[in-house]
Image (cartoon, rainbow, N blue to C red; front, side, top):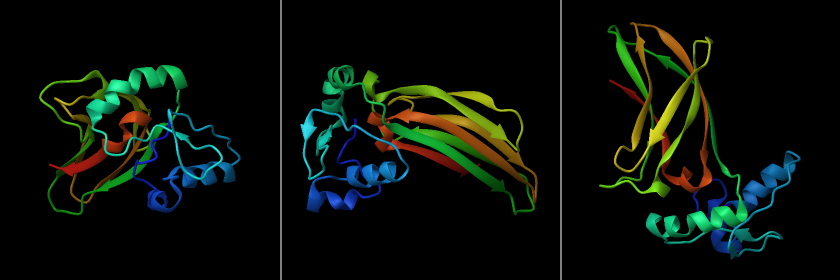
Length: 180
């Protein structure tokens, strides 16, 4: 399921063609030899396959209200795959701690099933064995710590991270590196 209004590469094309970033995504996938089938209850744009689930201006509670029926009908497999290699370096004369966090922009006083996400991430430090970290974010706790990395003065470490987030919640997802 592809949301035509989701910001991303090619999003600026929406005004002239109605395709949103789907045109960019289609062209990129086609150039790599992949075939796609856009799905959804909406049809708009000048593409040969105009299906999408874009609902401009809808709030998350409105999307959540249709998500179960749309997902059951179309069985989408779109999402965001994170494959991150980050070299953390401490140039200071004092030890530092870097914290890697996965977060969501969706916050609320109560949790709504459509606004929660949990999954596994593969985390590897300095080429060592991968460990599996369980990530769980929800509106009442929108951040999940993946790891803390203590860096001696002048030291560095390489953190490699891989995981996937389903398409319906990618818009508010983010990785954060913080120095504490």
